[in-house]
Length: 76
Image 1 (cartoon, rainbow, N blue to C red):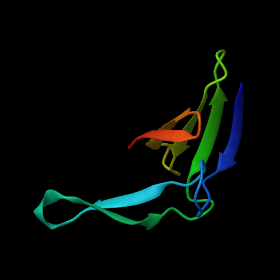
Image 2 (cartoon, rainbow, N blue to C red):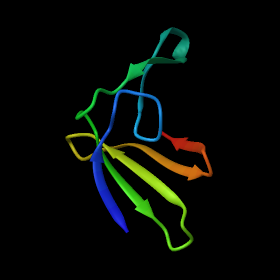
Image 3 (cartoon, rainbow, N blue to C red):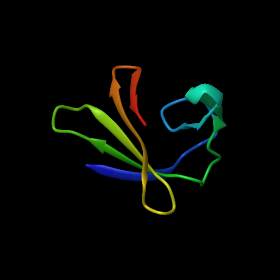
């Protein structure tokens, strides 16, 4: 089953951090994407596990989030 929404600038399952490359090639968190900047597809698998796919307006996947109970396993 799939549901659609937009990312939200708050904590929780529908938030998505924005990262940039800082000096020394390290990653720096620059806050959260604002509501409406990303599209979110929520998928519930046959086993009941929930995953989220965050996509920008160009259709590029920014984040894949798989829920493990209340823990968020993110792949940017």
